[in-house]
Image 1 (cartoon, rainbow, N blue to C red):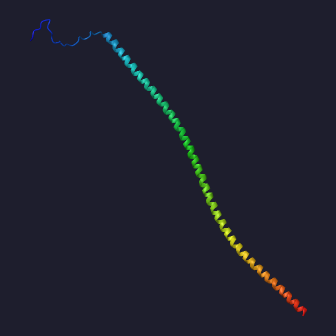
Image 2 (cartoon, rainbow, N blue to C red):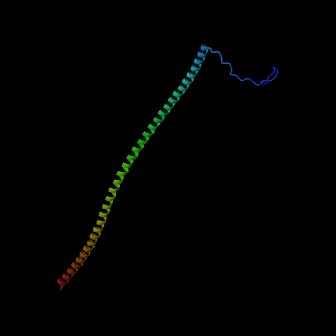
Length: 150
């Protein structure tokens, strides 16, 4: 082992720092202070969580209220659409009925036209027969006059 004189540099000596002298009451106070601080931190955190949950709950309630409103509007719109659909269906049925009526009216009109044509033809025939009869009467009258004058 090298021998050092007191004025020569020595390598440093490493050792455990001295342990603090134990004061049980002082430790107890420190521990209690630490625990109180932890409790305060935890309580603060819990309170902020409660606040957050309350806010979230309020937001959710509001959203649910809004959604209920929108659902109400939607169901009203659906009812309107359904009633419109029913109206359109009944109009469609009416239109079908009207179309059938129109078709039958048209058929009747065609039939009437035909009958009118036939009647007017017969009328013309009647007129010509009457004309012939009148002419015949004139001739007969003329002949009878001729006969009496002889």
